Image (cartoon, rainbow, N blue to C red; front, top):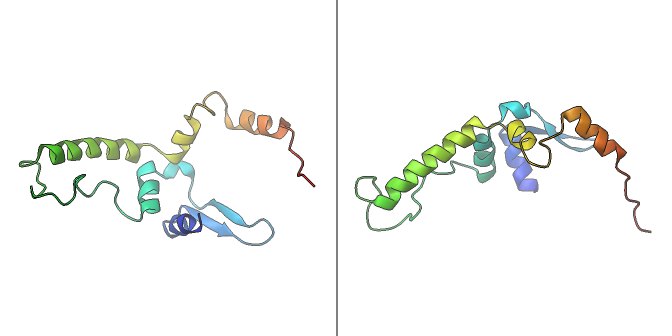
Length: 119
């Protein structure tokens, strides 16, 4: 987890908070972080820059390799979807949160009884 957060800090998506309330907070609004940017920051580079088969003898051009051609087409569409989807949209369109607005969700979280730590 520490390495992932280091990458997210380097990408300026989150920043570390020191002191008693230490942890991480968003440095950039979640609406401005695309899933593609987030995944590429975590993976430390482009997601789909290489052929699925990598080191086969075909040379990896769409003209001479059907699989590579399909891979390029599919990953181009996937990259577009990820680039157009913000972190906020992905989180709030998740089935667990779909029917809540943020204020309603926060109220339900406040009402849940907290479990006491075992002694």
